[in-house]
Image 1: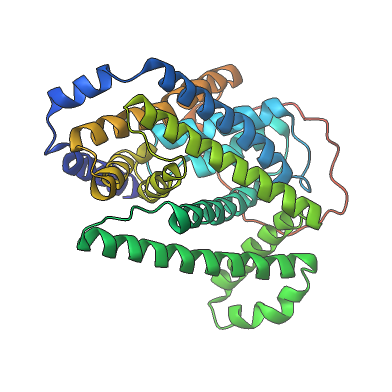
Image 2: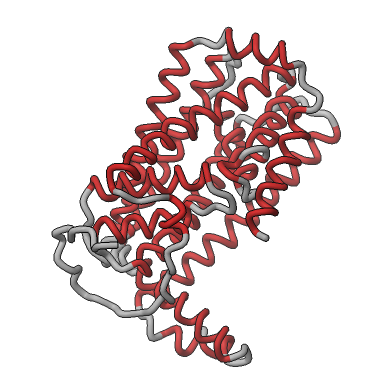
Length: 354
């Protein structure tokens, strides 16, 4: 059912995106794009994913172990390939499973690190959007666009505040996980025993992963790494805009990036449809870009973001003797909490037999 819904959403969004376009004009816009800027955008994307994203992932896995850079990069690329080719955001499961198989780490802390990574990413994108909104928002917008922009700004501030408070509370619990007995368990007791036990297990495993950021220095390093990563992704978007002669101040890329993230939140394979519609609307609705040019930009931007990393992921997949479907179908164990003050042996284990 989830697969059918994911594919159905992709088809509907693609139809909505394509139905009013002049395909000849879109083709001409793509053909006239500046290759040099597209090369810059591609390079920025590959530096961000998998290289820099994998390095940051290692920081979040510090308590679970020290997988090799190769294992981290291959798992990241494989996960993004899975998100591109399989429905329902399968890469969120495939990435930690691939790392566990390649490095010998348990799956549960790898999976918990992905949840933590997503929260950090959400906060970072909101911070960059606020930077844009403070000084670079368009001054002349129609009533409808002005209202939508105001709603987006209020929503970003609200989500950002709630997420920051949530991370602060989880960090408070992670410093001393036994606090969860006093502060969280009373809210879980009214739930059915199986559901309550599962939620508690997930929470404790998540806290163990958050515990890898055990000092202010760790927190600052991860925050700086996240800001650099998403600024690099913003630079990829800005370079792609320059390829289409869309010359805007660099912070405008953070606005387009926010819409891209909103589009990717729709669980279609590779964000197909949702990404295209959202990113094109950000340019046509707020900056008056012609719809065919905006559509050409959306198509090329999506291709630069997903095609190279997917090909790299498939290469790692073949080299490792895996398949996307087998990784996606691997049973994920229930998260369990087992604090380990010292990380396990950092020597990567060989891949266990299938």
